[in-house]
Length: 151
Image (tube, rainbow, N blue to C red; front, top):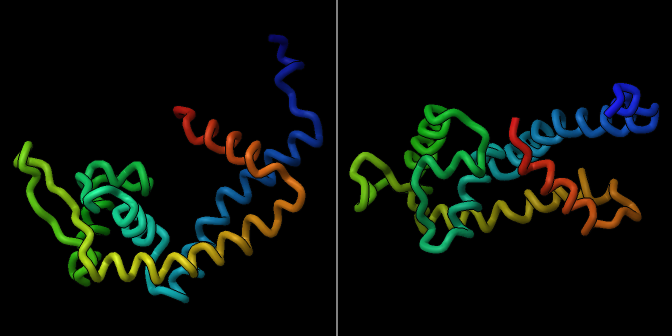
């Protein structure tokens, strides 16, 4: 492929710049809105809702990194915070005593469900209301493909 084929057109550059700005800005805005309405950070909400939607409502702490892009120590602190408030519990994994399981408590289930409306309202206003006329199936497919790329 020729280097000239790699150069973006002005429209392509504008689209990529807008996407990059949105990817950098949206998590901060969603986080702030969630904090105002639920007192949860986006990372805390992601862990709670992920657990609520997982069969058995239990995962290894290492699996949380698929839901929240944080270091292992950051995830540990996040789980500790949620545990102090009684939203999750910890227990050793029966098949590997070195691993810990994070278990969603009943109060965590209630908080996740109560917070879901605030989260979805933010998504509608910030994202979906700005996608007038776009094919959501194609949009979803494109973003899923981008999400599967390696660094």
